[in-house]
Length: 401
Image 1: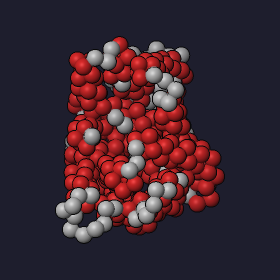
Image 2: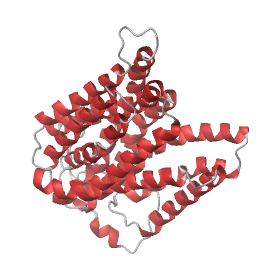
Image 3: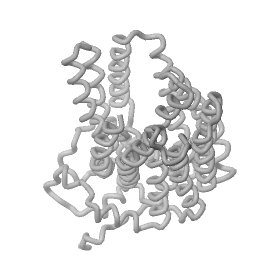
């Protein structure tokens, strides 16, 4: 599992900034079509047959598709929301978007209890197709670059979506008659330039890295820890995920929209990261089987972190660089996804074995808590700068005409 996550992390480290940057040029809807189409293929393979050869084909295709699709729909959805929602309501809206995703996760987990194995993959493929069809027919494009003569996907709408595009965004673009897709890939220098353009953006990148490091480290270690300590089965672990998902859904859909106007997204981010630390440390010192169930309920409060962080990031760039900014943060998170299993999986194996330097089975999870504590401390030092209304962060390589 950890090897699978590392391969996906390496892929998304490259593809997330590319997809985000391309969505600023070619439109969110056009780029959403790519991952939402590709994600149908793995489920369709096992929906057709579950013999050994088809399983191997599924595993290979699933890995390749995940390198492109993993997190890209969320990244583009956040950029799309930022295009269409005022800054004053953005954090709450990001929370609602995350809550809907959490509810889908819960429904997916619960549905597997009532579906046969063959039906599960068939339903998965049909739902993915339905999502793609809905997106293509009902989602209005929010960004259209009129300077690109050949868009990546031709959009035939009623013209209303074009009115939402910010023409000022593209006034700063360098005219080019022959635009190639892969020239849209931001270099490391471009990403550093973007992060240096705002202290708040740089601080958010540090928070994103350590938060993802802790999140993936917990997922990589928790199942083995609970199985070794309390003999948890996969069904009990699934119950934990469902409890956490339900609590997170309720919190993001109901509690977060109420708290955001009162506390502000910076304080709410710190609150979420604080309870992330508490939640992880409680797992690490669990003394009986019911403690993990209590710890999973902290999802009510730690789910604030991701939407608040993404909202803060969205306010530090102009409306034409939302995809680039969200893709950059997703790329940094993907880098953490690669590193985390390399660090925490061997540490978990060591402290669950007889070769442990000292008797503390939850030590690796406590180290995960220390990583989340670094993110929490950084969030306390974060001072949200005034939002950038409608301007681009210009790369130093560009030469003014």
